[in-house]
Image 1 (cartoon, rainbow, N blue to C red):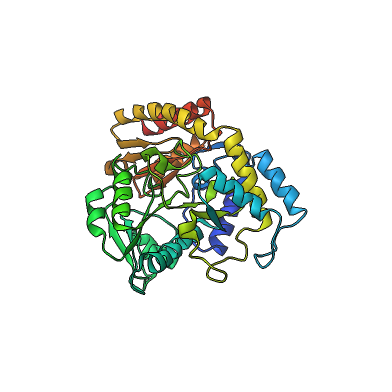
Image 2: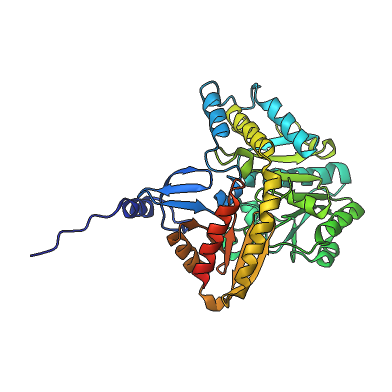
Length: 407
């Protein structure tokens, strides 16, 4: 008598479907999520997990925040897209709100984070030619080892990650890469053609790498000395993640340009922006840059609600307060022979493992079994980034699970 064939579970069937028909450009954990609320997500089998990645900081406000969902639904029933060929009633109010909150004169709305970075690169180059007087085609931008600014061909061209750039060349010239956190190396890289420094105040994809305290002030001083722009990529680190509106505020500096995205929509819709004062932003004129969907009314309504939630619910101060507790708890891990280092800023942490531990993936898989979803990066680092609505008790639950899997 033969055994009947075992039917695959819903999870297995959906994973098989994804593997058959999707390009294999990601290696996700084997969990299939079907709904979410706050810090919690549920898979297709009904199991509940705490989300400690927060979609790379896109859901700082928590999954499916009711105020943001309501704004999306209301706007979707009225007007979703006009293109920028016509004006819409949601565009100006969002630009005003974002400018007032961040302290910059102008905003340029796009969709994905990489588009905001591409916008910043174009702005810096045109500013260099038109305002600084750099010779045509000679503009240089200083960038850093370990950077992650997106995945367009221009951006991966100055990445130091072989997986990001391998076999995607030839790449655009005009970028000078130096070690992250090394202010002396950055200063030495300036020339008369330097138009900007593009930097993550904290390198998220790199493993929540926090530079020395003097690094950003030194970059600010060097940019001032050489008449160059300091541009901060705050797509993951900004909008409260690090316990301040922007992570570079922790260093007491003001950037000339800022890239934001992800949490700008609370995870409900792609919205990004480049922020700068008039002296930089007025290099753009009609036809020089744009996007069909950039600044569409649906995106604007969602982003307005997302910013209101961030401020009205005090999520930035919450990240600072609970971040201190998270760091205290994670310091307990330093007693584990598997743990090499712990870094924490606000509600963002990286736990580096020794190579002998066998890589971060095995521990994120074990965390999944404990009901916590987290992500490894650069093979040996566990990255933690809960939504900013997380409670102290939920942080403790996750930290207890991490202690168990690393025991």
